[in-house]
Every structure is written in C-alpha cells, then in structure tokens.
Length: 220
Length: 185
Image 1 (cartoon, one colour):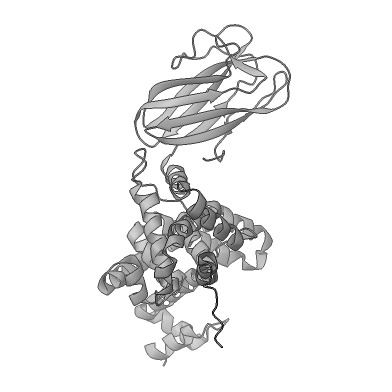
Image 2 (cartoon, rainbow over the protein chains, first blue to last red; image 1 turned 120 degrees about the vertical axis):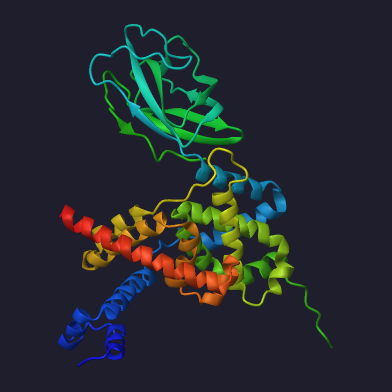
C-alpha cells in the first residue's frame, strides 16, 4: 500500500498519467488530495503568462526617463499624475442614439430643454464610483454636429454634481451636414483629476449607433 | 605611464545598472496593473525618479529585488493611496482577461491550462490586495519568503500566513470557477 510520502513524491514528479496505486491512495487520503490540489494551483501560478513589452521598450523608457529627469523637471510628476488619474477615475460613458424618429428627451442638466424637430437626443450615462460634487463636464462637438440651442459653439463647459452610479445626460444634437463619422469629446474633471472619453458617433442621415458601450476610450 | 580614463557618463552608468532588470520590472508592473501600457508608464516613472540617484544604485547589493521594491511602493502610491486624486480612493486593477482571450484563440493545445489560469487571474484580482502581492511575488515570480518580506516590508510570519490564506482562497475560487465553466458548456 502506498504511503503519503511516496504519493506526494509521485505527485511532484508531474507524470502525464498517475499510477493506479497513487489514484487509490488519493481516493482514501484527504491530506494527499489537498496536497495535490495545492500543487496544481502552484503550477498554474508559476506559469501565469504576462505579455512582452512593446518593441523597443528598454531603449524607449531609458531615453525618456533620462531626458525627463534632466530636461523637464515636471516630467516625473506628469507621468505619476497621469497614472493616478487613470487608476482613480471610474467613469464610463454609454452612448445611445434613437434608431428611428427622435423621441423627446428628458431634460437633463443645463443643456437639454424641449427638443425641437430635427433634433436627435443623444443619451450619455456617466457612471461614477462615488459622488463628485462640482465636477466640470466639457463636451467638444465634431464639426458636423451641434447641440441644439448652442449653434456655432463646439466647446461647451459647465459644472454639475455627479452622483454615485449612473448619471444620465441627454444632449439634443442637431446635424449640420453629412460629413463622415466623428467623435464627441467628453471630459470630466474633478478637483484636479481629469479623464477624457472619445465617443464615436456616425455621420450621415439616420445612421445608428444604439447602446454602444464607448468604454475603452482614450485615457489621459 | 598611467592613462587616466574619463569618468563614465551618468546615463551610461544608469543604463548599465538598470537595463538587465527592465523586463522583470515591466512584468511585475503588469502583474500589478494588469495593463501593458500602464506597466510601461510605471516603469518609466520610477526610472525617471531613480536616474538622479545613480550613485546610490551602484551601492545596492541585490539590485533586482531592490528595484522591484521601489516599483511596488510607487504602484501603491499611485494606485492604492491615490494621494493626488480625490475621486476614488482605492481602485484595484481588474484581471486582464484580454491577455488570456487572445491566447485562447491561438494556443488551442493549451486550452485547459489557459482557461484555468484565466480563472485564477480573476480570482487573484478578487482577493485582498495584501494577499495578492504575496502570491504574485512568491508563487508567480518565485521569490523566496525572505525576499518577499523585504520587498513588501512585512515580517516573514505575515508573508507565510498570507500565502497560506491566499492559496486556500484561490483554490476555492478555482473550484467554483471551473464548475461555472463546466456548467456553461
């Protein structure tokens, strides 16, 4: 009959198939079953993959680090700030455009009021991890779109309180011409931390992008 | 006759010291951030801070673990304490599923192992960060308990107990995850 020590030695040998004696031992020995499970997890952990860095990584980081450290005193802080911001802002934007005729939008914030004909309400859900009092929202429209009531004004900024969870913002969008696809730039800033989202919107008449999750947009 | 040599330029001394460790630093940064770009940014960030300290680096005995320790502290400063950002205090990166999904399509012979590793990576993201750090350094990267204790600034006993608890939790998560995968098939 196989003993625990022999069983554990066999388990460590990583044979492609376990011998009948070992299997019989494992069936009746709780400790060795535990040991086998621990080994399995340890082996999986030891071979956990990690991606290779991008080509030229070593030269790039060394060159940048040395030049920043010498020539640009703010460099280190800038990178640190960028990383901290990327890690800390948990805002996601979901974009929904109507498929057919535009339906009246809920008035949200200072922008949306009564929706007039020819205006397409575009709803953005800004998901925040917590309350952000006095957050600054900046919306930069592409050339072929404009916010109803703010003609010829592509760059809109205002302050509002974002609540924890989803915050709905409906922009009454009017199309100026049939220019191609473009992006709406949304920027959220709160007490010095900032995150930028680029929301792709289709151009042309009646083009639809319903419920597109616009996460994964460029981080700053 | 004695030929006097010019002293080496600081950038050459710095490069010679840190270059052999850069891939290790990138890998560790990736394991913590679960994002390739952020891993590179994090490595570059610490290099920028370390370049003026090249004299000190030359005096370090085991530079690899020392650099990992510096990297870890910077990661904690930026991602866990978030001193600069009031918006969210403690954001832990979630497991990088994309890395596994990418490999699952091209490495079909390793399918089962990759699926289990993806589950394990998810489980790692879900456990307490203090436990995760210990597992990443000891079980994934192969550092000795003593080295882990030095890098993380913990006692050896704490490292051991965290390892024990974390493994238990990971095993449980893996069993649950495997069952879920099986059911969905």
